[in-house]
Length: 340
Image (cartoon, rainbow, N blue to C red; front, side):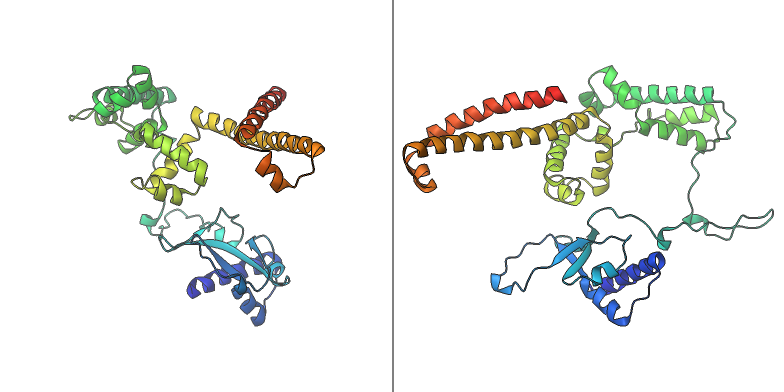
């Protein structure tokens, strides 16, 4: 942990010197090191006698000067969360990548005859050439063939026949990006020779079947994912640990971004705020009818709240008040929906 502290403090100092051009003294560097905290997902109960006072903890903002944390007494910052189950430090949320360490190093232009001394294995791999000898019409026709091959492959695959029982569903699945990416990659690897690329799409063993995460997941796994997402949000580590341990983290993240393009996500994103509004309306209206009954009883006799609940409020009263509150909720929620 001390080594991580050192690395992180060095980065913070470098960022601050670049943005606001300040030099930290040795005392300030020492203070800054002790102002960083690490959140933990581990819960621990401590006696109240251990409380020394109140402090403020804020998420590190790299666009501010570090002096904004040092100038305030009892002010701390954090940017990493420690997960005791896997013993790792993870970023709490996305950061704004500002500063010199996030800038791309643009190499000089190579002159004619000058060799490239960079290590080629660490560079990007070219997967498409826009200046190919094929016309746009020929490429589109090849993609149509790739979709047809994908539909045929799903008809032959038993698991796909169960998930997509209709030809329409199989054709839609075959038109997903994974099929098009495979087709375009095949074209590039075979030098844009259509006959050679088509033969690779349908080898001797049968047509090539390309499936992405959206197609690989079952309906029960999709339901588990939605339940986990509602509970944990975009905390994919917790989702994997508690709901989908047999899935890899890469698989869950890839599925999430594909799931966001579906109608199911649109329905969920619309219903969630509506559900929250309904719950808020019910709590407000139930409290209103409850205190109305309390006031009515107190007009006849003077009671404390404890006496009211003990002698003049039972389960039948609760059921009647709940019913009345739900009637009002339906009316209020309908009015809100119509206004929207």
